[in-house]
Structure formats: structure tokens, C-alpha cells
Length: 259
Image 1 (cartoon, rainbow, N blue to C red):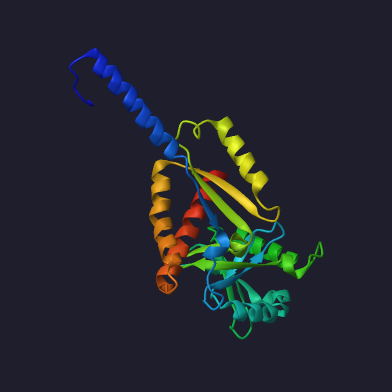
Image 2: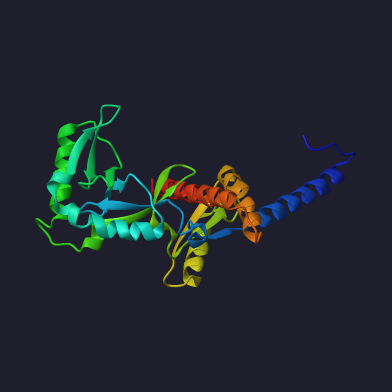
């Protein structure tokens, strides 16, 4: 129920005005947000830079149990290199939930790596460890050391591991999926093609079409982040939290698109 009117003519006028307002609101909703991921990157001195160990499929299998500053991590990578080729430094250990993980430790216990995912089967875990060691030691195919090691940042807001290339030359474009034109798949393709044509060639760009609830969730953090970013004397702890929250949301949106 919207209102009562004395005549049919007044009803028709009200309907036309309502349609005009709705159309105007629809057009005004066709905004977008652009986020450069480099702006979300943590300070190089922050102790949340970690190391990943990849398998032959470039899938991360182990992560450092400890995080470092950027400079400390560079030192750690150099120091663990020789120890990766010793099978005695690898083991399969049970978790508190009676699952099994692969562990890698240097002999002095200075560096410790653990599986990103536990496995209920001890046999499968041992098999995965042996295959990983064969890849690391170039038993079947020789691979550069750089292909066996990756970098990550620990998201202190969600405690999730974010591959460090998330922050390098990447941009996210967030658009509403509920407007009349933006709900049309063909029109979306035109928008995405136009955006990709205008971006620099060295930048990886991803478009996300958000529902009203997802957009509301994002904007609640985004506007607070923008306000803090404008402040030359921003609160670092607050800024770090907001950076992590936005990184977490962008990761969640990407996972939804990949499903």
C-alpha cells in the first residue's frame, strides 16, 4: 500500500512519478568500487610474512609455523634451502583431532613448517610427504628452487593464509548485481570487456558482481577504510585491521566466483 488518491488521474500521475523515482534510484545504484590490492599490503616490518612450500602442481603443501618481517623472511629462505634436501627433516605427526600432518623442521628447530591441511589417513599423508620430497630433491624433474617456495601473509583478522601475489599488480572491481542493466548478463559482459580494455597490461583485474547484502558488508568496511586512509596520522592498529578485513572479503568473493 503506497497511498490513496481522489481520482484515477491522480493515481496515474502518482504511478508515473513512482516509476521515475525508482528508475532514478536504479541508475544511481550503478556505481562501482575499485580496490588496488597493493594498498592493503602490510608494513614490511610487520611480523606476518610467511613462507610456503609447494608441490609439483604448484599447490602449497606446507607453511611456516612462524611469521617474520620481510627482511627476516628473506634470511629464513636462504637458511632453510640446504635443509629441504634432507629426508630426516620431514615427519608425519598426529594432531589433537587424531588427523595427520606433514612437518618439516631444521635440525636446530629454528624453522618449522606444517601442513596447510590435515589428513585422516596416515598412509596418504606419508605418501604425500614422500612425493613432496621427491619434487623438492628433483628426483624426476629438475625444477628451479623458486618454483618450490612461495610467500604468504597471515591475515590477522581471519587467521587465513593469503598468497603474497594477492598484493602484487592486482585490482578488484566491485559492482552491484541488482540494477536493471547490471542484472543483464550480456550488459555485464560489455562492462567487463570495457574495464579490461582500459586496464594496464601488467595488472591482473577481477570483477565481482555483488548482491545487496554483500555490497553492504563490503561498503561498511570500505568507507571506514577510506576515511582512515585519508588521515595523515592514522591509527596503525585500526588500519591493519581494516586492511585485513577488506583482504578477507575480497578473498571470500573470489572463492564464491571460483565455485
